[in-house]
Image (cartoon, rainbow over all chains, first blue to last red; front, side, top):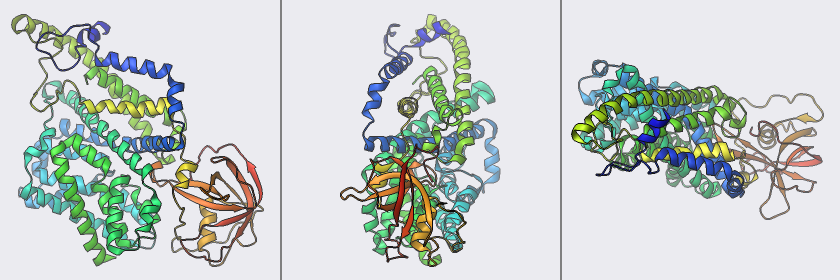
Length: 336
Length: 257
């Protein structure tokens, strides 16, 4: 094993000439980094002494730790879909007509208990298995918002206001279905270039299972860290008091809370409690917070870049934001 | 990132998560208690995946290498590029993982080397500490006890929203940390409330009168009585306690409410 590792460390993508065996490879770099960190731990910890940096580090670690079980659940499920569920199952379950498949897939989001971190790899795997992208994207957007765990949390956070649960369900589902249809009309599969998975077909079912999990986790996990860094930074530099002063204007308050949902990147299973505590804002503004959060936030955008590719995320995320805000305003005006 | 390194990284992440959830209670600094079984399961999954990957990839590579060497003899495939590599037309090679995966080292280092402290006075001072109104159920009678031990949330919501003024005349015992006011001499007894993780932590602050402020983040037990501000019930009220005693304590295991 040891000799094998040494032989294989040829470093970065292959040079035309056979690379030297003495070049430092990734594994050596990692070991060296670990060694340096262990030796200089005390000095490094000293850098984190200031309360602002400590707070940043706490929030960063907590976002990552909170999302990790859901991400692992998502990539395991996506690995299982890739390895054990034949493509014909999805063609049998979903209506042949793509326009009809979108709302069906959106409503199917009810069955995936989890937050947005789980649904991104699952949606990626569904597309890789031949599900119409429009339907898979509707599922991607609806699953974190309308599953029973999230709806129960919403009911608990807003006692005596069941219309909040109904409004959240309707507005989120409408957002998901509208986005699915928009994709059907305007979307291009070339934007989904990241999704081409390596062909693990020669490794047997369990090999495909393991390698898909590893592949998806490495992509999504790295971008989860990017999202965690962004959210923690915004959380520390953006004083909440500034947000509170914008609560009085009805239209502005909707946009402010929608934007806050994007930058805070709170897990969809917890955002209802945060929305409940934002009591100086109108119910419609808080509905926008609950509808936007699970479909667009900095962590989710990073995950989408990692799973679907940049050209997808820069088009999809802003449009989803607009549709989600519009849908919450209309549903809020109707139900709340 | 090559598969070997991926496996090492998976072992490190799994180990880091297990270290803070299964073998210690450090996870309580970042998330709620209820997440523990899921953290342990996720950590175990990643650790297992890394270990299996390290072993199996070693075996597979030995087989691949034998065939690669055979191929090398005929058409000079560069060493280290396995013939099973898959397509190469979109920027990253699947035999190697994405570069962004290196960032997964950051949370591992943060956990193993720094293990950041729970949120404290710095986070609390950035937020006004609004007390949200309670649900429709109203307030039940306070239990007996002198002093009566209450959480900061219970005290604050009764102080601000209870029209029957159930706190009047009661001596209460509250536990929290010190958050000094940014500009004045005033200070607040503080706890952070988590809904899910530290990113959504919001402070509950109770102004303490009749006692000198201690340094920020000092944990104290305060006994005292409620002082109405005269503006209740309103969201702009920060509850006030008149302190009889302030005693330094060591931080509790669970610092959040």
